[in-house]
Length: 190
Ligand SMILES: [Fe+2]
Image (cartoon, rainbow, N blue to C red; front, side, top):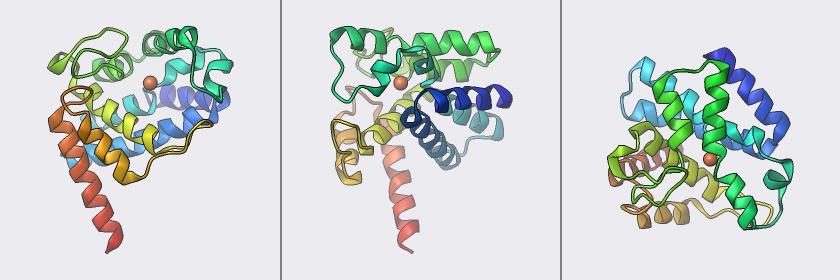
């Protein structure tokens, strides 16, 4: 699976540097989250790999959509919303069959209230690793600059996560993620 991971990341890098860097940051934070939640070695491996390639389907989207320096129009959004399906197909074809990894790629844009995409499943029907990945993914996206907007401060992004508990996110994992961030920032201050 590691070989396929490297291959996917290499392809992401040549497709779009911003998506590649985001993927690495999400993978990195996933590792910290896994250790915070006392995942065993196997769970950690799956969670980190899944988070690193959650957006791999974007490789198959037109460059114009990923590079666009303005918000996407309706048609472009329609295409963007299929990237979890494209990613799932791609990794299955490459030979990643692990259910947890596939679930992260397939369901990382589902929302707790069922208003996510592409399936619109809700609550704990969304596999737990995908629920966690969506929180880390959203947090990194919020604090990152985009061509058309500046990233939020850490504090603002934390408040956004908190505000979207029960709609976008699962309460339990937002709480845990915010505790993890507190621990990391107090470790940095020492
Ligand atoms: Fe995504």
